[in-house]
Image 1: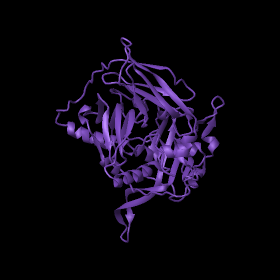
Image 2: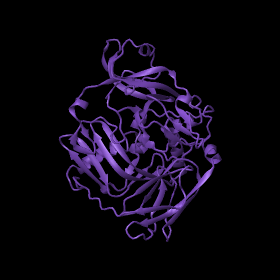
Image 3: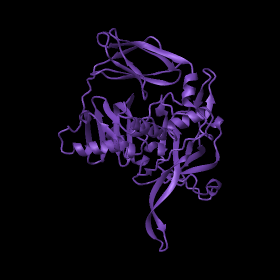
Image 4: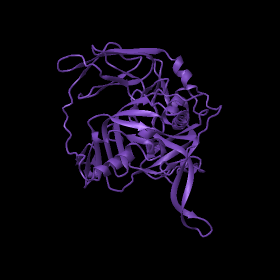
Length: 431
């Protein structure tokens, strides 16, 4: 896996002041009540928070809650209570967000086909889970899961598939970025270098032990933010991609190799090269779907249900990525909605996105040196990612938040970013 050399660039070319942008947006208020679905009695002390943010509250003695002075935008509200199934509900300034009522049902789901913590391989599975869930970079090394005992694992010897479940939210101390993370895991599957996981995230600011630690968190957070998905989306909606060092080009996935195609002939230089998103990288040829965005021989949610042979052939690549040389204009990515006046993210094919202020270093075997012998070569390349839409269009608010974050499939650099590299959506760097 690639190692990332952390280079932080802060200068006058970053023209977007995210904190000012948030302050200037109109605010909204969310209020409602949480009750037991069985007898309609109020649930006192239930957690009510906005997914992937530091914003939240708990219900009062009568089960009510209120979140005030919230910048208008797209949010996913999560309601949880120990022993009950969590609920999520999208809210925005264009959808209902007042007098909401959440009815929670007791969690009667039994974990099936899991390996108990006393199993001799449990520690090995935990190590694998941490690598693919938290990540393997410097940030991940500074993360600790406080309650790993809530995890249960199932490993299939025939499909080499690792699945994980948690009966309570994972509590993660991220000492690299200074956040305590509460992660309600809803799915985790790892299979032959492909990983899928989902859940609800609540962030809490950690208290620094000393001033030096606070400074370290500030630097690390800015490093994690610049070049991230959130930085890109905010730059896109503000139409400041060039000023913020993003280059966007069209990428088409085709099923036949076109070695004489003019587009390939115009592909020159190493400016946007990356080993896992290079223009000639073959792709699996399988259409993306909301339930499964990975190519596996088996259904990740039901390993006993294999993909039909005519749709999959082991080791066979079915297509190529064709990169177009021209930059994609804003009106080919954003569509203004008549009803709300906001922008929708909408584009054809895929987008190949490069951030030119950070580099990754790819290790590969090649010929080099006087003797022209095979040797390990470290090749620098800019951060490069590919995004593909699973829906025709999705709402994008002024803060760069998508109404449904799962509407996008990520490949390349952004796909390698895991929980240890994540910041809350309400984070904004210093100017």
